[in-house]
Length: 173
Image (cartoon, rainbow, N blue to C red; front, side, top):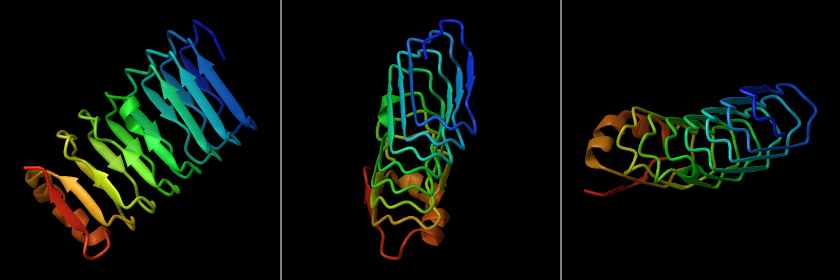
């Protein structure tokens, strides 16, 4: 899809299998949730702020040049890998109930909320996410987490109640 005047794209509930969105200068929001999508590619969409692809059959999500992306919800998809560093201004990330085995949020200094319940990855580094206020990690598979001592005091209860016993805490300060 290439439409220079498109500001919002709603294909919620569609039967699309593949969607490629490129060079959409005004597009701010994409809702491709509850679809048959297995592949979603988004390139050169500089005004995109919100992407909702939850409850889809997504196995591939390729994103580049989306500097204003603030909210990404890919919960309940089939994604195995998610590199959130491609969206440096991301504030909210929801990726729970997925088979993700690797989550990179180490470059997301604007991140305020990350929600990853029922995920498979075993380690995460939140130490650079200095604005993080909320971390939903219910029934996750973490065996280690890298964070600051301040973050540990903020998220102590979440970690104690929701992570497997014996989780390794790695402090960066």
